[in-house]
Length: 122
Image 1: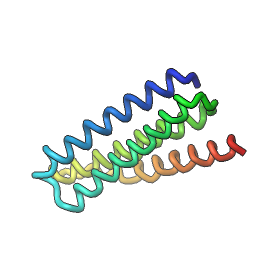
Image 2: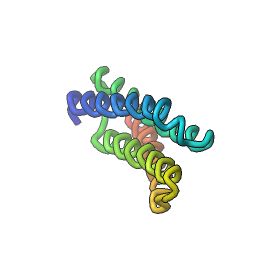
Image 3: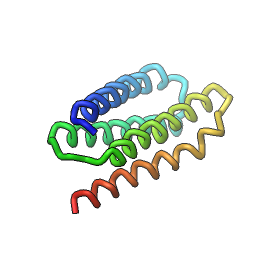
């Protein structure tokens, strides 16, 4: 995976994290319950944390495997975006239950990304 792709992915996901965070803090704050807002914020935080990890890896020049890149990237999308979908659909009264099992799969991708990074470092 090239540094440019890693940095571009990190920048895009980081940018979306800021947009979603602002959307949650302003537009959704009025329609979400406290628990729903907390869940939405968890999705935003995990997205930003992992975008920062990708950015750090990209700018450092540390070579990561394509598998590590894809685990982090797919993990962010599956974990955070499924939470966003669950929370917003629940607030609209039509919870998209099929997204529920996707969240832990995304979390598993994130954990695997960290494990691959650890293995590569050792």
